[in-house]
Image (cartoon, rainbow, N blue to C red; front, top):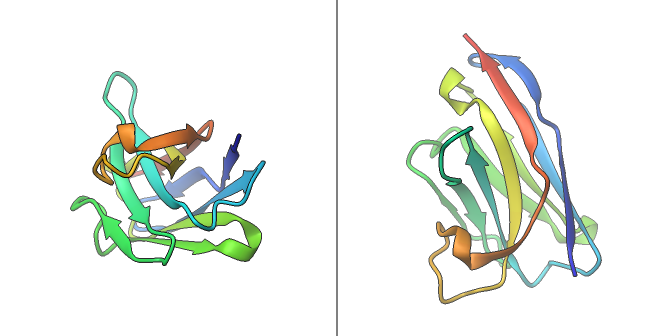
Length: 124
């Protein structure tokens, strides 16, 4: 079993930056791909970014060039650096562990373990 705890969310002005962290416990996730998703009230969970065990990355078009996903396997932690934030980035962000490799990286079905989420609010 894996427990994920996100942190780093908060309130920031448009154009500002935040760095989200996702700390895993229970077992090491260094051999797993990890992802970040976000979900606004009443909407489906949306893919944001993915990082493989070897640190290759993949982003949604909406965040490409502004967000950077990275990982520190020694700390069992994944990060999401968010720059040039926009009001439309306001929502709850979740990290997840990918265990189902036959699903696409942008599909929630590919991920088995999820954190509780951290709120990001970007004011205009």
